[in-house]
Image 1 (cartoon, rainbow, N blue to C red):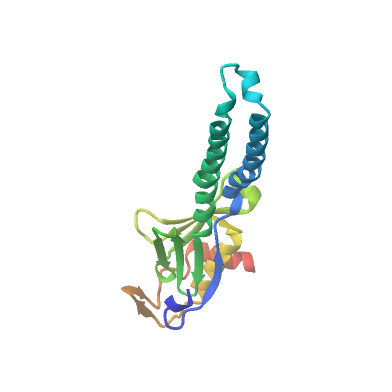
Image 2: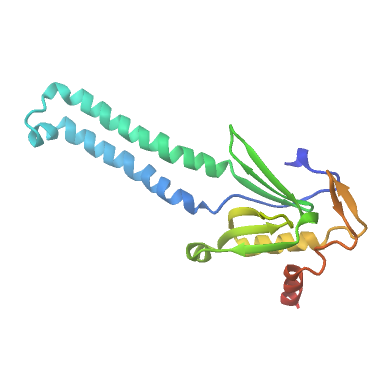
Length: 200
């Protein structure tokens, strides 16, 4: 990220999505090998032949292969992609931008200049409230606002964004077509006024 910073830009916070999405893959990663090992031992002991008399002993190798293949399919086809997707997602807040990056091989970048943000909103489901995460919505004045999903410690991250917006230079600047007016629209926005009242 340091190589891609703008002149004078500083990194404030770097985080990944709330890891709750890894709970099911983690449980499966532990349970599937144990179940597969038990199933393989049951097959070797002749369990399938006792259960279904039509199954012959020479089928044991194929049944073991099917059991191992099923376990690998769950681990490599379900658990691993979700772990990699979580690891490849990163949210970066700098003194000028909010950058969200998704994916490893097929990367998708999303960035919003703080100078264009008019309001910052946190939306939380019941589970997100328990885990203190949330979806942060950045209103830039366009019909569809930019949403950064499942940010951990969403309230703290929102505070960091508001503080970075409040510290933007008042003299005005331009960055890739984004103009910061000294009388910028974020000064005095409801979100900042609410934050200032809270700090008092």
